[in-house]
Length: 205
Image (spheres, rainbow, N blue to C red):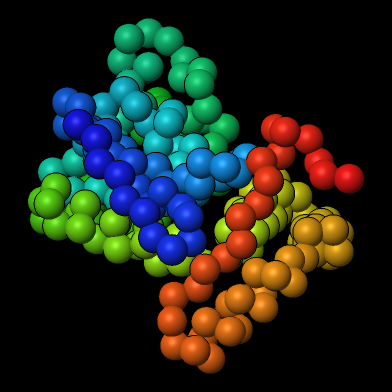
């Protein structure tokens, strides 16, 4: 099952796929490389590797998370053991990885693994669509730069992160997007950010 929505930024605000009891929401801007911003999942047996790679995570109250590989006699090998310790305390990840027990939605919220928990699927999807729309209303370049900088800083020192963002802004600072952001606020209207060429076509000269 799918659904798609647009706003004045040119973003595809959401692309929802529901199968089994999994809901995945992807934000993207079709003409831009590296444009996926977030994926939202609920109900989680056996898919925790993908969940750990998401920017944002939301769940319904009946959802649970499990590192299933230990229960079938193998070591998790698709990213959970590398990514999850950066999201929740390492001791919690070790317990989940060693025991294969289920971590319920409320515990996941308490541990900081999910952003929020909702009573049912409908209320969750309504909330995450609103969050997606808020992100899509921002400058595409600023959102992209924020994502790239946070990803880099996660795996490097504070000093390296500060040097990275200084270099990033020196190269990627977008005065057109900033100008439109200011004008739209003064005019009390939605911003209409200019389109950007896809990187896969090569840089313009």
